[in-house]
Amino acid sequence: MAYHQSPYYFRSTPISRENHGKLTVEGTGMVTAMPNKASITLGVMTENQNVEEAQNQNAVITNNVITALKNSGLTNEQIQTISYTILPIYRNIEEQSILTGYKINHILEIDLFDLDKIGEVYEIAISNGANIAEGLRFSLINEEYHYQQALNKAMKQATLKAISLGHQIGVTFNPIPSKVTENSSSQLSREIMFSYAAESPFQTTPPIQKREISIQAKLTAVFYY
Image (cartoon, rainbow, N blue to C red; front, side, top):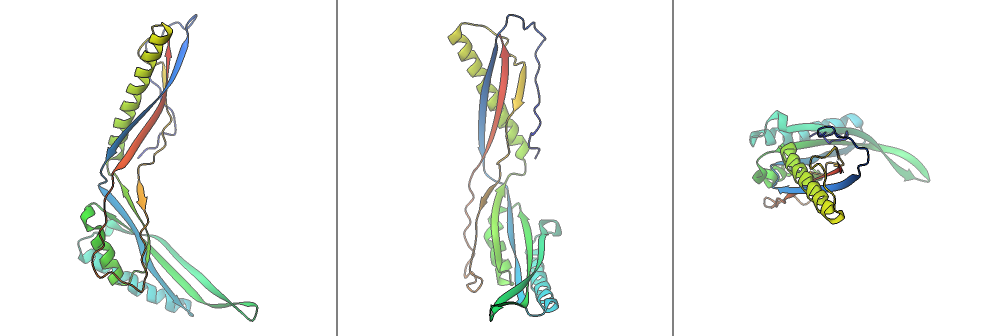
């Protein structure tokens, strides 16, 4: 989704601004929607004194996880590697830092559009060797549509504010704003943390509850009277 870092403007029919006042108001609009996409971040961590052995062990387990997820109906496009790291392991031995092995982390991101399968995906991944769970993020496929609805609400609120203020100070003004600037920053995704002990695999599919996502738009509108 575009995150509206550059302002855009609505301009009314040009009017003379000599001897006219300017009214600047802010508007906020919000809509809520149930998420229709979930992104699961999980992975495989292996350790070994030999870096090649650690890599080989990690590759075998990660391939098992990916194969099992594909067998459950997921596609290649839904399973992506987002991080692969090789970290040396040092331990203090007799006041010296000694290299004792290597740790390999292979992190996957799995996109789901059937949110009822979230728990199943965790169960499949963990039962096939995944031992890292870094988070679960809910989002909207059609974020821009919902944002535009929130933006329309923000514009209506700004206009109503201008009308109310105009009545209070006894002036009339062009109801079409001379300039509108978006002040929004996207905060559409909702992330929850999900963790487990690698030595305690799931006995049943974990229940994952969806929550509504709030989409907010803010703008500043300028009216002349």
